[in-house]
Length: 184
Image (cartoon, one colour):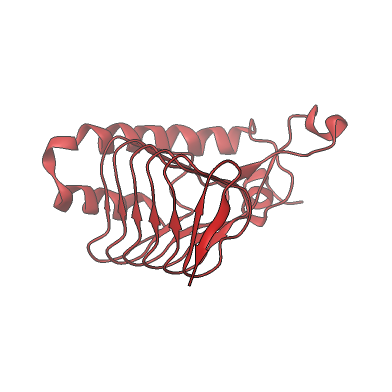
């Protein structure tokens, strides 16, 4: 029988209130408190702290505190990736952010999802769908990237956009829901 954490990582329905996952959340909250308290210490210290918790942290990757995430260990940052203040990542499954990608303040990347069927949803179970953001992407302030979305290389996501479906390489998307405005 699989643990709730194993189910979560596989993207299957899982119980987020399971003691094992609550312990992981508590550990991450302690790490987040240290990370966010390091605001005045700068990028070298931030990078060291990110390497403690995240799955992968490329050279020169920066997340400006304050930062929030569920677990941390599912986040992969490419070299030179940059996340500005107040970003949030719900990383119940893998979230990949490519090299040289720039993410504006207040962006939310959500890999956590819930059943559409009301009877299943009422059980409190949830699941995850991986999010992949390519290389050299620019995501404007306050954008939301929803579960299961892939944003292609060299794409632009306008500030405040709600990205509900995949974004092709080189496309510019804006709005709620985000629609392609321009594509190379």
